[in-house]
Image 1 (cartoon, rainbow, N blue to C red):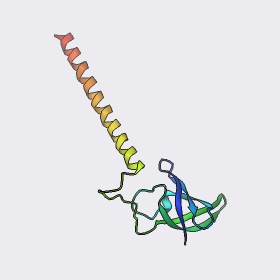
Image 2 (tube, rainbow, N blue to C red):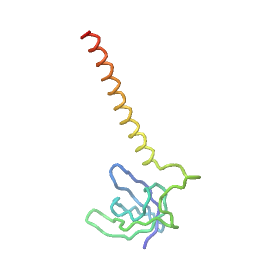
Image 3 (spheres, rainbow, N blue to C red):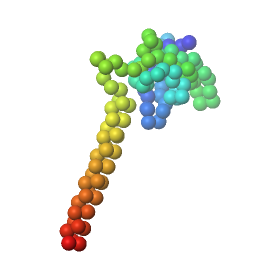
Length: 116
């Protein structure tokens, strides 16, 4: 198995590139090839199998090294960018629902005052 570092990863698109430790060559990989149980992060050391495809060299069976499952520990590692963006998106959805309910309440009060 080859070893390398995740050079880039776009979690929204679900793919990234691994730089090989030996020669620095970049290998494309898709999230479906990720065998870790945590988030995929830039700079994470991994091992992988090199596969040739019609679009160029690819990595398959991408596994984090040193037993690093990609999970963050609660005491010293910050949340991954993917986790932080997901949290912001949940907050925005909550804010939209609450704003809609507040607006609906104001309309109900105005209608009530007009009817009376």
